Image 1 (tube, one colour):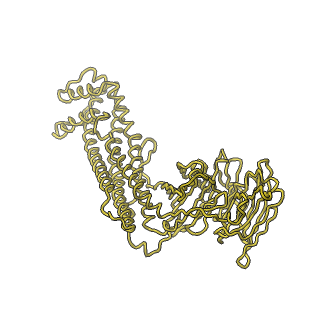
Image 2 (image 1 turned 30 degrees about the vertical axis):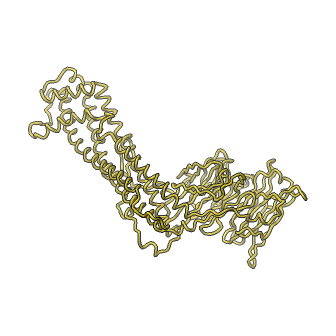
Image 3 (image 1 turned 45 degrees about the horizontal axis):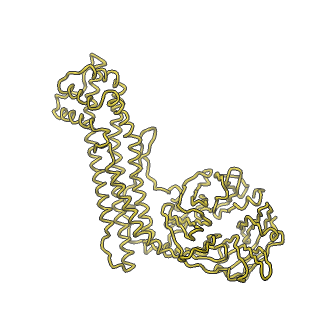
Length: 610
């Protein structure tokens, strides 16, 4: 352990899977090895007062989630020098407590024999990426796969990630499921006149969590119905995959326009519109094609504006624009659209199953499915049409560019022999004439040309709106009903006299046993003045079992305590915890609590830390 200011050690969190721990350091949040206290990773944090929680990955131990009070979550890979692998931004503000849990699916093998997902049986997707202003192919990885996909040695079933945040103003919770699905959970109480901030979120048992409030009350969050329902997890994964495919489609359209289409259109604007004028140029080229005559102005354009270099670039850009459009639409967007159709059918099948289970009267095919499927079919037709038209237009424009290449080189070299013969094949004349029309259309905003994706993008917007309505109307209520939030209970607040003001400073779940360790501040003016800070253990239901009063030095500063933090230290022989007490005037005291379990009882030893 590094010799740091104890106040800075309030950011110390031990990794229970690997011999690592975190601390506040000169470069931000540091990750150290326990064996030699060597720093292996760090992430920069400028405003430490905004940190709401730090949690280790409970399955592999290689990731760290850092929650902030503005609702954002930073996930880093400690084996890659603290590289940011995900940044989750939520709409929650004034976050007072947080929790990150990774849970394996709790369904049995018998439940896995049916309900196969056809999408999983389809060939793997690929994705196009930009490399040196060109498009190249790489295997497709879903969003958040870089931190969510675990090796087989770490898991047997599917893993559900739950990032939970509590907002003090509305006393509501936000569950971020699998890093992408945001589910707001409201508490049963409607009276928010008394806003009590939360102190901590703890996991009290499998699928059961407790939010402990500053006044000693608590609230249970039960996720067992959600985690034990395979259909519910299937529905969650289905809607996330549907959104992911929609994002995949939009990203590929934007990539194609930005990397391939825009340079081609910019080149045409420069070489045609800027140097000659598009319509005038096409008319001059038609006259040359039909009559064989060439004007002085067109000669200058062929010689000085186009030349050998630009005609070669024209052919290259045209090839990329049309051929890569055909490839991208055929092997990327078409496959994505097919997946979206299958995922939509699966989503609605699961929704109808839940409706049938709940006894809903109307179990007919939902209206939203008809609209969504219609839009998906329209987009698939547009994608197929675009791919076919792109291939056809490229064949015709190749004829034009070969003809143009001959005209350019005839101007540059009097002895040049044309490579394209328009008399040997009657179809060549037709294609060349048609290519003038395509050249005139390219780049026009009101054109339905292959290079304008407004129709597909508009259909995609309608699909995204359909998915959003389906999620809000059907999926969110299903997931909300599977996660139960109870009303507040007194918890260990009931163990004290009503005259006492109870303020919970910190509380942690004791590993492997159903007990909690807490630090509570008690104060009262009448009938007898009391100002104490106590350390105690309690059953998970709040029944107090053992308490000790912290020594006088802590009591003297209890009126202005800034931080009290319980840190669990790894120990094989006993359960050891450090209690960091820091005052607003930099008065810092560290105590060590050692817990021993004997005859089913917890014995607590409290003393100064060495």
